Length: 297
Image (tube, rainbow, N blue to C red; front, top):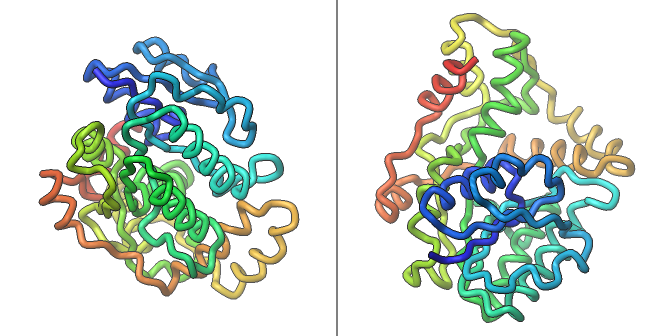
């Protein structure tokens, strides 16, 4: 079976992908910053490699014998030594260079659906620049253009507080529809993409089934827990001020504020039919995901 290296294997996508491919019999190496957090993956059979995208020496030689690379790490919220410029830009470009030297067969890069050269938020411009760097590298690449993860953007940022505290603050008006995808559906697509030459040198949008506003997400969590929550909104004018105030000492939070201003009016929807046809997915709906989360509480 192929040797798969997962960058950021302690994250929600990296961990799910590592567990899946271990079950399939792949040789999996988990590249992480914190070995203790990868103990369960190690127990399942993964080799754990400790390193850091901001420390070039820890990347030397990590691709020896590796067939497929999956990137599942980012520094959107990073600050100081782990700021986005070092993780998402320099770190990922160095990964690509090292993978090229080692003759990796396929480099799977997880990008975002709205990455663009002219995006108002630097993280999304960086994602676009790295996409282009990978395309020009000469590696066989697969770029996944992903929407918001249900696990983070629906549960962590919204539903968790509704479940645990009965209240939540939504950044912006919360009326604009957004596409959400469950990580397990991304893994289902990765199962088909990994090692398949059909998907070499392709940029692939991967969408969830629901384009739904954050206000509607909050309503689904209220329905699932069968109680009303106190739902507040942080006005766009306040978000703009916070983006400026936070930038000098916490650029990650500032980035979230600026991104929330942008998403309050921009088109964050995606058409799921391409994903369903191409990968034969039976995608998880937000309501199914929320019911699953609540049932475990």
